[in-house]
Length: 307
Image 1 (cartoon, rainbow, N blue to C red):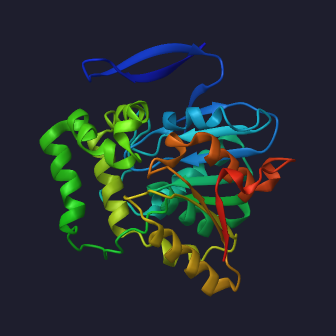
Image 2: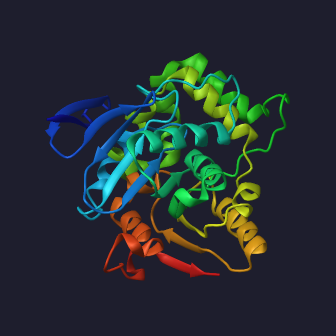
């Protein structure tokens, strides 16, 4: 049996981690990349986490998706047991190339690809690089990136991420940032605890590479070059990657292709939208990628914008 970790806040306010056995998730590795998988006979859905997270953050979401689906989430290069890239300041295309090698190795000719935050930059870069490998593309809490040119210094607010991590260490760093990813954190302590627990396990070297990738990223420009129409999901209360970042990417795709992609807004959810609202997020994903479900959910799970 595989281990599943549950995160709770005890009465003293300390983060506690307890382990439960779960037959659902398999922890695997290929091409130097670690990932979790929930086997299923149906289409494969592949999830890309954000900059302060890991594959395990998707476990609760998996419980809300049809049992027929094959669900996979990677630990990006430099996260948990995944090897770092051999590049000091990688770009989204470098992560996309690693993803392509992983899919080749595990025999997945095509996937429904879901990226969250930093993962949207990787997902879009992958869709540019390997359009025939994409069955559907869903971008959640889209991270625009900063478009910094090669060799240019990091912007102060970007560099501060690395300065804070170096000063505080992963656990304190996670404590200072986790609440900002959750809507009404004081009323959602268990959600904050889960977000904080995943962030506390980041590898500083891998995180530094991801920060450089975020700095060089330009999601809107990348999305415009993608032929597959993306779907977008955003937490209505996201303060990290606010709605205008999603709107900018959707608008650029519309300008390039002549039709407006769909955006689903999840109410009462912040940046960690699939952690805070796994049921509505699953419903939104099935709505945007109806091939994943024979009975797509109604709009009651979130507000849909046909622009």
